[in-house]
Image (cartoon, rainbow, N blue to C red; front, side, top):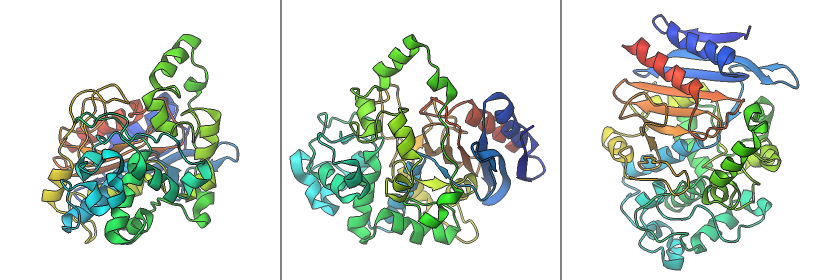
Length: 391
């Protein structure tokens, strides 16, 4: 029997049952879930094992790398600047970052960049990994890179490059690296355990990611289909691994890198955020209203940033995906609560989002990854339980 601990307010028992069921039915090993309703924490649960090798429990002090759930944090930084009148989504990126105009990109707007429409899912000749982790070389390479497709309004998921692009615009406006801006303007005011660039003193708190056993034992025919979808020569494979710099997604090199302190310490604002469920839920609650006196931006900015601007199939993910200004929007694939939900999911299953109609901020993190890029039954079950409780 998995040990589960935390807060469940009256009326939210079904959410606790769904969280427990994830361990019994969906192979959760260690996980956390948190829900804010109308700016107040109503569920905050942790359970299982953080590190099977040591037996360390998954507790309220455990931290987790959340892959692309980090993209929502980068989008929030941009929304804050928009709300303050410092960033215009309709302005050319080159207005803030002049070097970006190279290779015919002078007219590409911030909005196109943030909604995965600028065709920069990788670079032709990526710097070595140590230079990528130093950040400046990959930013310079992106500025010089020509779009991989003619910018025509179509979109393709910028799995890693999205974060460096947004971060450089933030840096040009504020003079701060995105990780520093995040701490000063968001994490510390809200009291979040959430870093984009983890300080060394917090490394012992991180739960290592565990690769899905199903991925390791795929039937050869199924593995061949996966390779056609996300192999290293596909556009998605290049986007996920920065053309091999991080290895192939799900490969041994990638697994080792994403569990390494050198990657945790870098600034990869599309993929290396390290946090917990309580911080994700509190963060998204503060996009809807005041949380202990802190609100991140107003309703006008929220509506603009979270209105879908993409249509049709995603060049990398192939299915239709809907993006606003950096946020994933409800599209029938993500396990979100309603048609106006917004946030971001991460590879393996983590997710953070808000729903303005229900008034909730939602966060789920875990160490046992599934093979899905866009959520799984664990988050679907939790979301269904949340909706039942709020009715």
